[in-house]
Length: 412
Image (cartoon, rainbow, N blue to C red):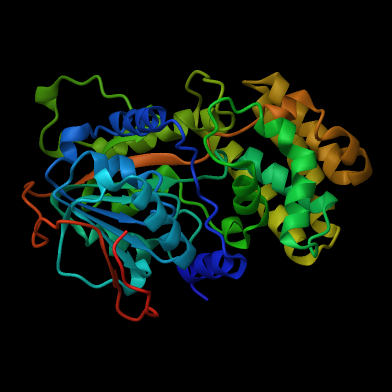
């Protein structure tokens, strides 16, 4: 089964779309999204009057911000039926953002159009796919020359804290329990952890389902460096969130073979990636070879955690001990506190009885969250022009992508 369909099947099996955001304070929600796009180098004028495609918008809570910026055409492609239903409800509650917006239910790999878009957005979908290059190829083909692509990246360091929580959860909670009972058990373990995230805008239940239960989210990663390497022939890096790419060159030097936007970005990524381990902290740049070792150790521990989750065999758990120790030595070079935490978690994994008493009350673990998703914006080579096709539309409509089961038609 391919990756997008696996995502859709998991959500469909449980009738969920666990990507909802708290938008009770719409102004604050819009400020969050505006802050994201500012970091990515996309002020409001990059959307106004433009053709915009969003792939995988889920419940649409983030989409209404884009719609509020008044794109000329805004197409939303969503494969999950429950996501489409919630998307419809979101826009029904905010009808002033409906103009010019169209929804298509379908998967990216089934989507066919001759249209090209000035801005293409795709959050939270590509990193865990085993078919990353195929999906990225589909996305890039939809970007007009000079247009902007925004994707999210997740790597072995940035989500390591969350993978540790998943490992501990699977050591302590019976995987055969019904979903609601598992979520309740996870809440006993991690409610104190999530309350440390002062600006968290996602519900705890959705977080548990997507991070601790969803089997698809245990697949491959897509680091910023890998994404740039895959897209680098046709796209140049614009910016990222968190923004850490720096370029102090005199602008007149940035010509011909000296442009090297992508090469500079990848080089700085490997000096900076240890900062993805904990969202609260910022360390000075580090030798790339030490960060490559850090990355490899996080990746190897995650693979062992995946093996344990799949087999429930103790062998992967036993193999984790030396890796935890090596990782603690590496991390101790820039954060002794995190090194101690890693050894504590290693003990929890070895002895679940001890972990059951310690997890919720472990203050350092409770505050330990990685930088999770990183956003990357890139500019496609070529002259920026208006989007082909797609005129002004008076209201939101639904239509069905080829090869997808029918959906009840109707305006939001």
